[in-house]
Image (cartoon, rainbow, N blue to C red; front, side, top):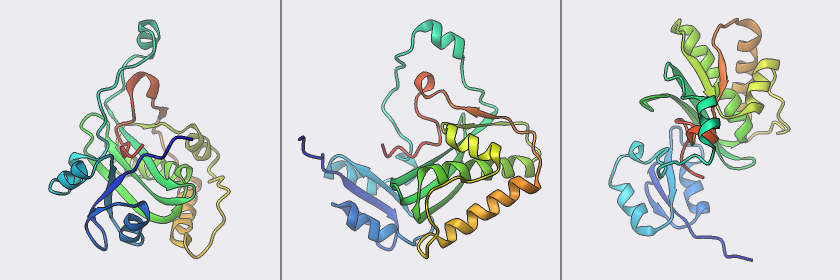
Length: 213
């Protein structure tokens, strides 16, 4: 069995900031800290260097993407519609610490972010991100489309139901209150926004990706 690669964790905003050598130590700093900013790195040197810089210089950053699809497939799919916003979620564990956000698809400018929540799942985060995006676009009377890379979240929004198997408890009480609000919004609002599946195989990670894979 191959040995798990060690990671180092930079915390820009948390109960304590700095570079931590284990996920357990990092988790202590970000749990119950609203708007926590953190990311893992493969070497101690890059983690320390990142701490000197801005969190947003690193979030969602990936190496150059090259699609494995054929030119015919890529032509059929086409390019993203940049008159849009993209949403995504990140969960460290399932369940685990979860957060979600929405960005301008073209510029990657962050439009909203929620979390981290102490106990959630990626599917819940994707669902909440979509509803948050729908509410924002309706409020602004915007004709933008909404991108997500989660078919599960698209299905839950369509059914106006968060079909999670996660059980409510004291740790995730705030999260389930947010879920209830999201479901209520879907049941009491109409919208014209088109929700579209982000074509990851053709375009790479969705622009709202947290870059923690």
